[in-house]
Image 1 (cartoon, rainbow, N blue to C red):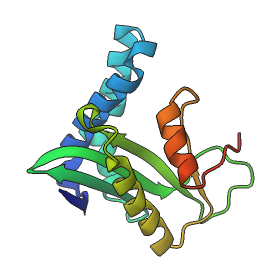
Image 2 (cartoon, rainbow, N blue to C red):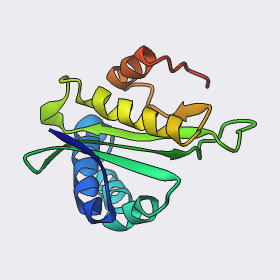
Image 3 (spheres, rainbow, N blue to C red):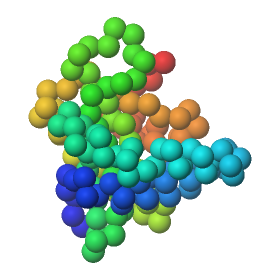
Image 4 (spheres, rainbow, N blue to C red):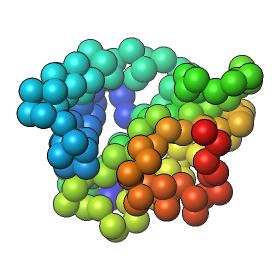
Length: 149
């Protein structure tokens, strides 16, 4: 396995893995049309290119024999946090291919994102997670994240 910083040429891979993982995890909550509309506007090459080219943002891609297994995105916090400090960081996405969940791959990517955020002097750190995503909440709790709102 290889965990590396993603580059703009990875935008399609990130979009495809993001769409697949989002659909697997949350697809049951949407009508087919709403899900399709969301995927078509959120998981596109274009939506990934700007942050991939922004030095304040970082994507990490975990691959095995050229197949994308997981990715994470971290950077400047844009969550609606009261009194947000200027160097606040955010874990924006952490997606693991459905066939590879439960193998601690998310932890590998999260460790890399947290190290990058620390190296870049981000802090405090925030993330957003759906209230029904118990697995993600357990993972983040193991890393010391606490619910703030």
